[in-house]
Image (cartoon, rainbow, N blue to C red; front, side):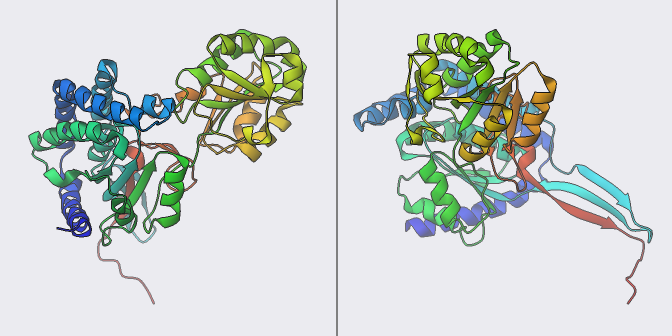
Length: 420
């Protein structure tokens, strides 16, 4: 069978499975996720062995340390993956909920009811845990899913998929509820983007700029995506310096390869002389390279001169751009010019400044006195996420199970006909 014929068959099978899933009880879908979490725990040895194979191969092909870090699995990571599935299983059922109910003067009763999207294609790169998270979120929301992981972590993803598949079967759901494209052939991505003969309802890319740009350009079906995570932390004149130091350090250095990692520090000129060196202390000790504008380099010799392309750049490395700004307006203007509508944070004890920042920064997530690394569906209480959507249609921010639903209007009458 050719790859195209195989992919079309997957699309047809997923379409059939989606109709079964849409009618499956919440308990049955929950059971599939719970059993998948158990299977992942039991398959720890197989997953770790597959991951070591992928890591060794990635090192031989000179992939970046940040890329390899994103694909690395260990005992803690497997436990966290199973825990994430258990949390997703505990989420309220997002299906068949009456989102609104009203009655018209003619007696028609209209109900807005949540329903699945149908069949979702998820294309991702280095993070093999997405295999489990995406499958569980789609099961929770009653959607069939076709997964296409990156070739660099293919063996790890296949081991995780096998565990998830056993959970699906243990719950008595169709095995085609969750499918995986297990070939590294890039033609498979193109076929997914074409919609598999109209059997695909949505594509979600999760990966680097080139992947997301390709999906946005070539997809013939709707797309949830974010292009880059260019996140800013703004230290306002009324910031607490100890809090600012802790938040900036965590925002940048907790995990430098995640999309919620801060890439630029903005600090008010009126407090920079006092606060910036104290903030730099923690960053420098943690091994962060700092690249600043002339005002920043004057205040601290540990900050080297930035180039123009350091602004609006997703480093995904222990590198942070630093700019001294005149005031909150200049900070907001900088974010509007260089940000990616992902996640930005203000550190301030002034509630009016915080409200202004949150109202005027047009990002999916805008934080006050908190780390940008909270840009995560699990931290939002969603149990997990497929990604952070930075667009403005349908879903925005962390995409959890509830964001993977649509709705229909169910209208009840008692014989009404419309007048001419």
